[in-house]
Image 1 (tube, rainbow, N blue to C red):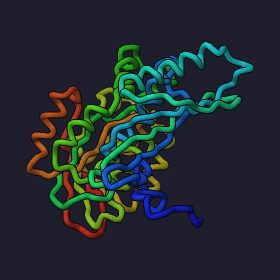
Image 2 (spheres, rainbow, N blue to C red):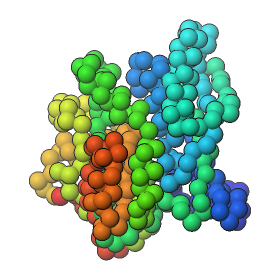
Image 3 (cartoon, one colour):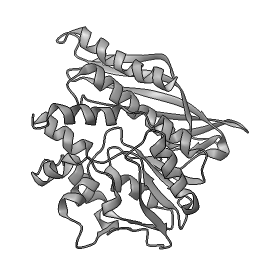
Image 4 (cartoon, rainbow, N blue to C red):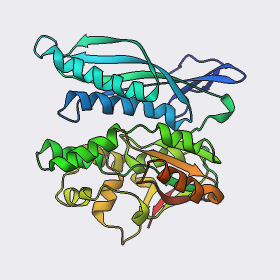
Length: 316
C-alpha cells in the first residue's frame, strides 16, 4: 500500500515500532499511539486501569511523556448496565491521573462485546527517540516486569487462580511504565520496547530484525511470575503464544537444556508488560539498581547484544 507521509514523519508505517513520531519543530516531536482490547479481568474498574496502562506504555517505551488521551469504547448499551461502562472509564481515568495525562474526549459505538482503550499523544525531543532497531553491540538487555500474565489470565478465566495471585497479577498489569521510562532517561539507552501481545521473544525479534545484530538471552535471568510455571506445565497456554512462536521460530534458537514450559512462557502474550531496555553495558548495573530501588523489583538483566549479522535470538 502507498501510505501518505511527509518529511516530518520520523517514525511511521515504513518500520515496525511502538508508536508513530511526527516532528513539529527542531526540539519537539509528537508521539502517537492507540490500543484497545476486550476485558481480561472481571472487575470493570481494574479492566479500565489495565487498558489505560497498556495504552500509555507505548509512549513510555519511546522515551516520551504522554500528554493527552482519547477514549475508545465499544459497549452493549442495550443489554448491559451502564454502571459497568462508567466503572471501566473511571479505571482508565484513575491511571490517566497517575500519569498526569489529560483526557480530551473519545468515541463510543454500540457493540455486543465490550472493548476499551485509548489513543495517546505524547511529546519527545527528536534527538531522544528510543526506537526499537537501534541495538548496539555489547549492550545489556533489561526487562522491568515479569512474564506470565497471559498464562495466568488463562488460569483466571478457568477459575484456577487463587485470589491472592489474581490481585498480584492485576497489580503488575495496572502498573505504569512511567517510572521506568523516567529512570532510563538518565542512562545510555540505545533502544527500547514494551513487551505486550507478541511476548518477550516476539518483541525482541522486532528489535533484532533490521538491526544487523543478534542477541543472547540467559533463560534463568528472565523474571517470571512463579505460578506461571505450574500453569504452563498444565497446558494453560493461550493460543496467541503458539501464534507468536510459529511466526518467529525461524530466528530463535533454544539450548537443549531450556525446559519446554520456559520456552512457552517466553512466547506468552503479555498485557501491559514491562519495558525491554538495551543499555550500554558499563551502565547496566547502575540502571538496574535504579530501577529496583525506584519500585520495579522484578527488573533483571536478561541478556546482551552480540555482533552477528544473521539476526538471531539465542536462548541458553
